[in-house]
Image (tube, rainbow, N blue to C red):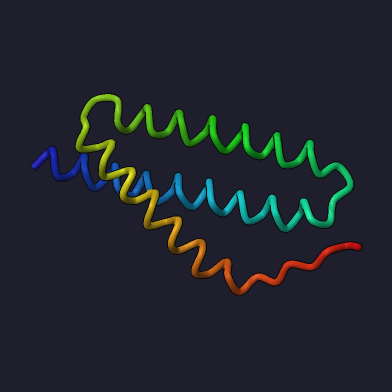
Length: 95
């Protein structure tokens, strides 16, 4: 029973991490197209997203491979959700 609860926690943490990563990517692309310091925004956003997701996966999956796999599945499902809902966002260039 404890393994099932840990796997579910890993799944929901993966959903959160995926939403954070891919939602942040969508936000970065939207702001980067209109911003003045594009390179700084893209690089800093990438570093922050990778560090947060890397630490999150390490914390969740550090004790069990099952927790890591379920969090990875949640991460990939969150990717699909963000792509589905982010598809409706219109990109407008400032040029």
